Image 1 (cartoon, rainbow, N blue to C red):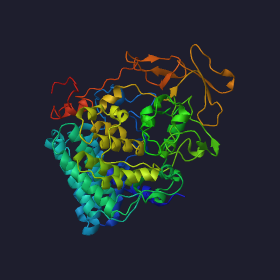
Image 2: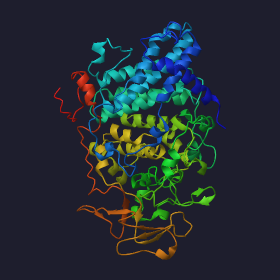
Image 3: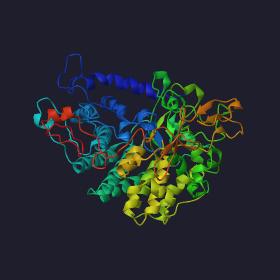
Image 4: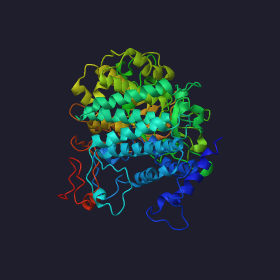
Length: 593
């Protein structure tokens, strides 16, 4: 059963909306005013509850489109079709105004301990707000006060430097860590959530600066290490390990308190108060997304003994049943692999809908939630902090075998992978090809960096990280590659659930396949698209090949290195500031200012 806590939280948020959403420079007689509000813990909690709506939503978490999960309609950021918007484009500041308004008035509460706790929560959310802005736009104007219509110099100020803003973010995070309560609460921001956010922010910023040639990257990664180690040492968290499939169970619970040994902060969903999302529908419905999982994810999973799947002869043409054998158990807990059961019945991937052949099952809980879901969505968990720590130390060149044994190898052991990662790991050719920028730089410890990236890919898939990981590693060129799916060796029936019975009939232009099998027939060139990569270019819809959904000869994807790692500033904002807001490099808005 869901807790009533979420209902009470909603009522608190609703009660504060009239204060936070109105014109806060005017105080009608029937409204509370700063002079009578912000006096006690209830007031501070009521106001700061409103900030929780800015946490990542379910859609932010599971919509992980990049090079390993793609949709039939490619996002503009992947296809290279982004345009400069007139307005919007996430250049919004309402949440920041509410946070700064609170911080300007919380001094009215005379209980210093209470005030510092909720000030810490407000500054946690301001750090999160600016982190998202910097990820998207780079340099942005820093505001730590409420800006009114008379503050012309602030309203029309230029952008502050990335370094300046991130120093401010770090200050907010350190204040939050020092002042927010340590008491664990999976649905509320705690000191441990602030440490997890600092770990995430500083890893992103440190590696972004390193791979994009900016100063200060070492200091950022050292801050990541410090925050990660403090959380691991003092937080009392451990990897969730209950049940036969603990990894899958983490993402299929209606109550995150059941998994709070690992989950540090989650977003609560509860259908009784119409708080629900569509993650399950997204992965099952032929009309809700037809989400495609690429070979890049499938090939990234190790064998169960820790060896490379890609070292097997003709690994990419083994066929679905064979390629799923003896793999990292997380593969079968993330995708519908042979043996997958739904409501006690063998259920293959729906090749008619999921046109790359591989179908997600992460976050799936029960058939009754096919239209909506109320499964809680993890936002911070210990496994991510382990990955952050290992990567930061690897990038700094300070990683030890003990570090790996206490992080990556614990994650692998929980998953059921028996092999361990060594600090002296050799470079595996397949995964090196996934990261051409790193390969070009050729660091001396490239092998272990690549393996940490592999681990991050399979552990955090569908949790909202992949696109931004590609951005910070400066690997955007991978979006220009053909997105490959399942290999189809020839026309005929195909068994996807491992019961030795046909699930679909594949027909080609010259071969109808086995139409007598009594299963749905899918024709290459009509229902499905095949691609055969070649040295002289790709050919399509032959007698065999890899499933694809975005033909490279039809949709030319182009990634511009000098432009596409940042989003453009909306033109209206630039006009309003008379050009004080400068456009990001490579984006020509024709304004001439």
